[in-house]
Image 1: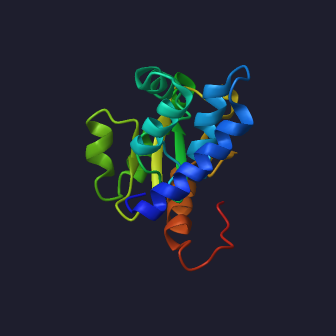
Image 2: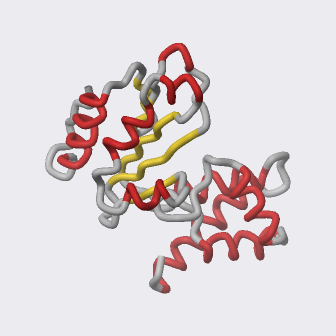
Length: 178
């Protein structure tokens, strides 16, 4: 999204999204969701946000309020793969902290999480590690989502295997997670 060609493509995509949703109830939320999905790194690029704000005459501050309120939105580039670890009480007592510690072997991850970040993406943009307050599946604790698939009763061995498989994904698209 740094070149003028990329900006032009982004604007065409955003214009198409606006034309489908502008004026409908919940349009801003829907447009922002589609913009994020259209982005290669699944985040709301600041240039794209400014363009959408200008085209829809929506204050940029309102857009950022929406983007920061909903945990679904990303303001930083995301990895090709996402691992989300539940940090709710049930998951914590059943070992989610250990799972997070296992994932902190990724360079820079431990420091980011210790600094209070709820999300970390590797420099190569292959893996994003996130935490959430609760998945609402307490009876299945600890719970981890990998690329949108929820796994329950996850062990340290399983999370290490998941991480290894995702790291090797560059070579083999047909990975087995558990």
